[in-house]
Image (cartoon, rainbow over all chains, first blue to last red; front, side, top):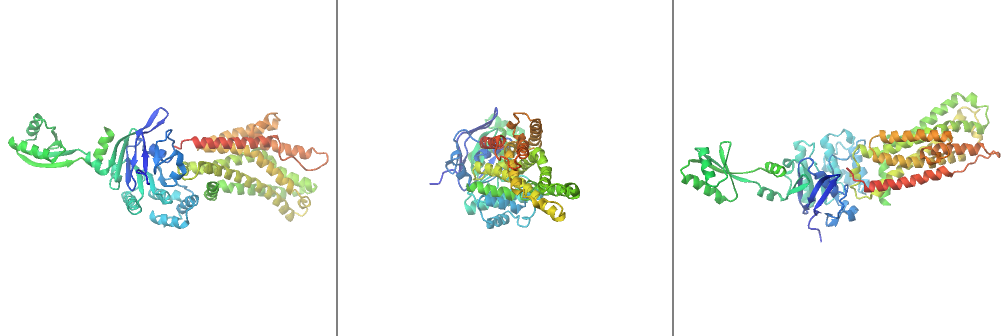
Length: 301
Length: 266
């Protein structure tokens, strides 16, 4: 029976010297999803990823991939993962093709697969060029190609859009979406910029100071974003004072009154209240905090 | 075993265009050419000697340098180059996240370093042997073709190879742990000088220092060959410093694996 989660950690903690880098992280990544693992630099993303790849060792048996405990099933688990950690690890003195051929030989893959990957990451024309002479974007694409080479069901990519121009980011997004949609792969992708990955991810985990602050679907993340009623009246200060005196959390921000709300009934109540008190209401609208602001408010809270 | 063979092939594939590999071939070739030219232009001084003495003078020109400085320095350079390929590309994390056992990756790298050292030393023996005959072709007055030194020559080089395995293991571990060239190079050079001094001074515990082993091996070879009254050119392949060198190699190799296995890859 396939595991419920492709990646699962149970209260994973990790300490570097005296510093607690991860504090009871419980990741749950369902199969067939693109899971965005977000957090500012130094939040603990790369440490988590290194633990998932057994490069750093969790002392307890609390890391499970494909339902298998990692320390006990290292080779089996790693055979189902393609990874890219921080900057792509490539041999600069070898060509792009030679980098892929070397990895293919290690993993007993055919040279036809190398050609497929070169096509997929659009490096066929530069395949014979030394990887040291590649641009940052090309190196990143080669790194992704190396991760994809064994056709693994799980891709773990640490900041794969680093150094890519907007077109490069769009290409990576399309590639990953295609892999998930057409081949049913699971992608675990880390980034410190929500804007770079929000258009591709289906699930999100937000980490800061080693703690997992939010985990859920992207829709659930939208759900926790603050909705506000935005009101413009003839006399903003008078209207705001009236609302405050009557228990509404009104704030005047850039020539509008803003009041948080959860149900549409509250919008109707506020409107009726102002009108019944003879305030001239010019406009009433709703605004929702964008994800970037929400991400910042979660990580800075 | 499959992981080991695949990793070993990968080591060759990765290094085949680098100095790590080519130094093992070019170094003996260039040195042989240089010393042969020296003998060729000074042939008049060598020709009067008997065939055996001509060979010993020619071989001695190499072995003196090899035993003291050349082998330790080559080993330091080669072990550094093999591990530096991974350090330079920050490749350790990628290598150790592959579905291949750490033992296979580590031991393949070690045995590749051992192979390069063996290749280099055996090429020295081959090129020296070939050079003698080539010089004889150009200067027929030489008597290199009148004495078969092949058996003795390869046995000497085999002993030097065995004597260098301890240094190789230690330097391999150093270059595995440290990415910069200065630490393994500096420590290795310091130990090499220490080894040369102790061996030359005839310190009775010099055999405990792996970096002195090639020099001691050479001294033993010369001592046994020259000291025989029956003029038989034979010497013991295995003696105290060779056993210690092999022992150090095995112990350091095992320690290196435990270090790698327990080490977190940052």
